[in-house]
Image (cartoon, rainbow, N blue to C red; front, side, top):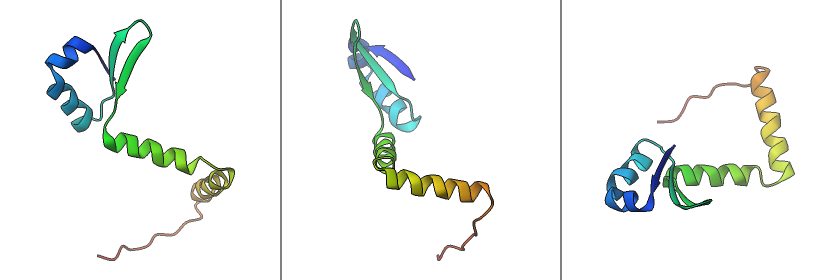
Length: 83
């Protein structure tokens, strides 16, 4: 996780954004006491939203928990991908 000030972010915007996107870093820009902004990559944002969706209902959570349990018990099979 990276942290910087707003003025430093302005000076080095490209470098910070490159680190966020290429190195999967989270950037916190401090704007004063207990005030700030968090910058994450689009891929990270989409991943978080997908996780929130999966956990959005009790039924989704039950299906996911059951799948994890089956996997841990070795109750799964492999399929070949169609090229």
